[in-house]
Amino acid sequence: MKLQKLISLLLSLCLLVPILAGCGQTEDITTTTSKEQPDDPIRSEVISATNLMAGVKSQAILDREPDDAFKAAYNDFAIKLFTASAAQDRENNLLFSPLSAMIALAMTQNGAQGNTRAQLEALLGNTLSARELNATLHTWTNSLTARKSVTLNTANSIWFKEDRLIPNQEFLQTTANHYDAQIYAAPFDEQTVNDVNLWIDQQTEGLIPKMLEELDPLTVMLLINTLYLDAQWSDPYRDTQLQDGTFHGVEGDKTAEMMYSVESFYLSMEGAQGFRKQYEGGFYFAAMLPDEGVEMDEFVASLTGEKLTAFLANKTRADVHAKIPAFSYDCDLPLKDVLKPLIPDAFDEKIADFSGLGKTMDDNNIYIADVKQKTAITLDKNGTTASAATVVEMAAPEGIPDELPVYHITLDRPFVYVIVDAYTDLPIFIGVVEQV
Image (cartoon, rainbow, N blue to C red; front, side, top):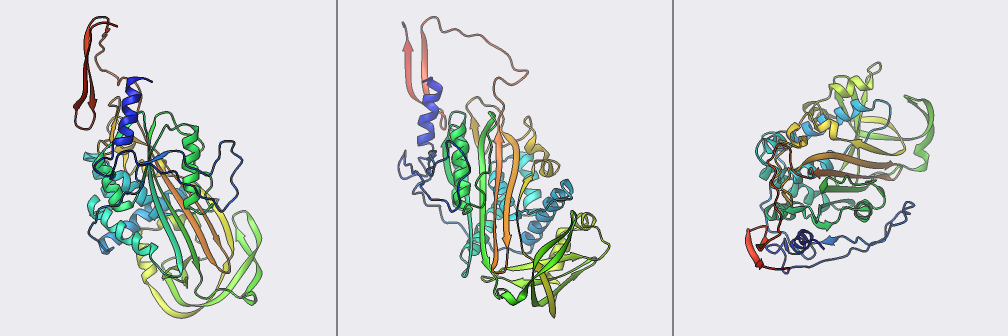
């Protein structure tokens, strides 16, 4: 084994010494998934990557309830990404989770510095700092997962390439504190792809069994969030409220099961109207129907965070005779092209500043190579199950950067060598080779 790989392996096992009670604590996760696995010759039920956060307890942090500033920033972020994603595909069903995307990018933001961090803060929190956003997301997601009569689970993980990246300990601790993330050291080979897919599959109750096809050789870190929601209607539909109807879609008329009910809240805005239907556990479904003659792409393009906030707040007590079609579909969203104009520095391999994430063994720059989200939803007479997974893929170029001086050194005579702790630059071993 090369000396560099030996050092990186030791560092991978011990890099969380200030966080872990003891070095080298590991855990293999064994879970039976709820859905038949895809045909994959290396698919297993055990994640083989080393989990460096087994048994770790996050440090106490102050709660920060979602305030008006956060709500405005969140809705603005949600609509920006939703409308841009809709513009990429005007014919197929779309499902986007702003919460999953925000959590994944907020974890990434904690490793950003300089102008890269400023752009992420402007996108995610508007006037909120990264620290305020961390605290608010922590408080809010904890309250969501603690709701009674509904299941909403969220999970986070960070995977790093064990022979190329040394993660920053402060970044890992911040992520553990606010997002309870699992940290995995892995070789980023075919087995790692299997492990990541299995982890996502487990967290989404089998709704998203396969997220990744392969990993680019330049990828050095993955930051992942998953959401799983299982919410039942407060007033489920009875069989007498179900009837076949016609749905007039972009591909023509199709027969659909329509679910009829009388709801209590009417919603309205310029160009659209809608209603609310309540789930158990403090959630609700809000429909937004554009006026006759208004094209969907034009309507979506006109939406803003402020308009969404106003629409949901503008509720009027009424008897709303509503019909909802039962539906089920999944959606793949490539978010790179959506996000690149909003945080350009983060995607630029030369000027991105993610030095807070850690450093590569060859000191090459880390940047965002890709952001993708996969979602799935089923809405029927009983309620709604929905899931989302968002992956932020961090990469670093390999080899010697361009325009650097080149030297040639041959150790063909006596020399001194030092084995050093990369975090402190303190030597662990010092030796001299006088003869071989």
